[in-house]
Length: 255
Image (cartoon, rainbow, N blue to C red; front, top):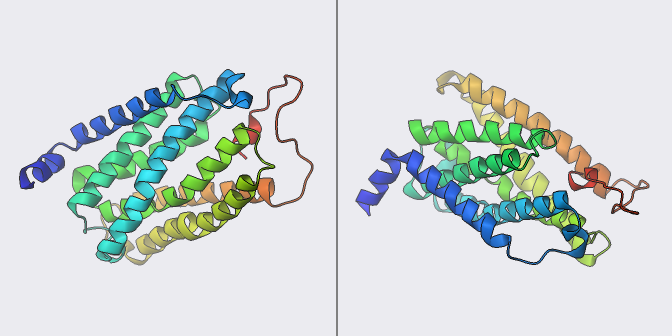
């Protein structure tokens, strides 16, 4: 056990690469599952469905994992810069591999221009996570940042339901309420807590300026997404749920 832990720390590149390959295998396996009729007729929606399905697997794995780690080791909240355990280190390896795989899927599928916001997000997250893996600093901060994946479970489910044109279903209405609650409690709270911690301990932390700039940019992004979410699901307006008469409508996938 001690040998495997030392190997993990000494070869984070290998661990991240193995995670990327694993998520790519999951992507291929999910291709064998049937698609909703509203999805299978459109190449973009078919790709988006599979991409979101892999993202959902990542969220189901890493969100509860991150919360469990903080429950087991509360020092993660108070020693963001220095504290970590083998299980938290492994978590960041796994999640880093996913973000690299997902970025590659977006680029290789020809969706880079349409998904530039996601690529920017993945780049910001990946460089922070890799910094933690190679320096052994801010691993705890990365774990707290993964609290957002609890919300992503419902966010990805919401988008999958929209792709399947199921906005009128009871499941969608229940999910949108859970999505709103977890967006505030897990996504916004986690991001703002890390930002507050960096500001409070700015003078004593390594490269705090770089991380604070990164967090500020990400905070702006999640607030914009929060507005889009409220506008799409809770503010009354005239909108069509699905494309009609063969007209392609990709915008709703991101709202």
